[in-house]
Length: 217
Ligand code: AMP
Image 1 (cartoon, helix red, strand yellow):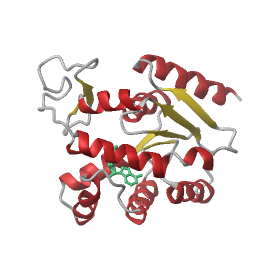
Image 2 (cartoon, rainbow, N blue to C red; image 1 turned 180 degrees about the vertical axis):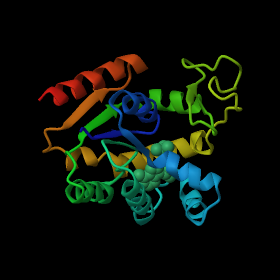
Image 3 (cartoon, rainbow, N blue to C red; image 1 turned 30 degrees about the vertical axis):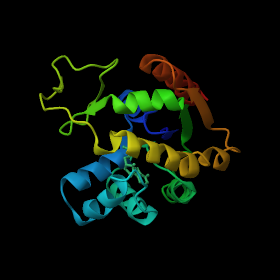
C-alpha cells in the first residue's frame, strides 16, 4: 500500500490533485486545511483557537495539528495521502514517528512547484463549496451556474484567507516554514519535484506516472 505526501505553496493545486489521486489509488485523503475549516465551521474549542491563526494566514500551532492528525489516524487505516501536512520540520518529524509506529510504507513525497504570480492568480480566483469541499477556479474551472456548486447546488464562497493581504502572509509562511522541508527530505530517494505551472491534467499525469513506477518496483 502506498502513502503520499503533497507539498506545495497555497494554490499549488494540492487539494485538487489529492482528490483525484485518493480516488484513483483508494487512499485516505488527509487534508489538515479541510479538517481545520470543519472545526472552525462547527465552532469547536479547537476551531476557535485555530481560527485565530488561520484567518491571519499563520500556521495553527503544531501541537494542535499533530493531535488532530493522530486522532484521525487512530480511527482509519490504509494508504494515506497527506495534503498540507507536514508544513514544517516539527510536523515532518511527527510523520516519521507515525510511519515508524504504524509500520507503514515510507511516503512518496511530491513537491508541486508553481511560480508566485501564478499562485496569486489562482488563489484570488479560487471559489469553494463549503458543503462538499469541491474547488473551482473562475479562470479555468468555472462552475456551470454562476457561483453555484455543480455537485450539490450550494452557493460557492471565497475562502477568508484567499484575500490578497492574507495570501501574501501565507506565501511568506510557506517560504520560511514549509520550503525548508525540501532540505529535510533531500536525502530521500522518494522526493519528486513536479512542475505545477502546467494544466491540472498534465500535473496529474506526471504524478500518476511516478506513482505507478513506484508501485511496480
Ligand atoms: P490549506 O487549506 O492547506 O491552505 O490550509 C488553510 C490554513 O489552515 C493554513 O493557512 C493554516 O492556517 C491551517 N493549516 C492547514 N494545514 C496546517 C498544518 N499542517 N499546520 C498548521 N496549520 C495548518
